[in-house]
Length: 175
Image (cartoon, rainbow, N blue to C red; front, side, top):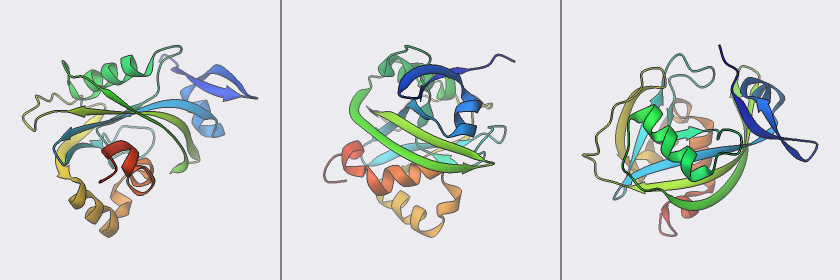
């Protein structure tokens, strides 16, 4: 199995580090999050059970780590295709956020995240990769907030953080 190297900071220097090692050590690292929107509804995904952390939990449309020296926009488009079979869309950069979260199993996500939004139709063709995604659904932001309040444990820590702390940046000031 090929080791995946992602950009992480060690002693203030951006360095390629093996992905699992980054999460075991809780190193601050680069990431990308994409939110596909159809009006006030977001496409969310349920992570495949084979994922090494947070399997079976609902997350935003897609998240990943850029490859070494890969621009965020290119990474976002690549990962939309790899995870969900989404192509021929345009991503809009919304800014950058940072968070640190325990994702279980002794793993920590400490991410500096470039956030992207795609405006699409609910009829957007999807072809989820079963190694990455076990389910998808559209949900309005209001319904998502209600579900997060009732059953937070079925959602990834980062989706909870995005919705609680970064909604205005991601979805606009009235979100």
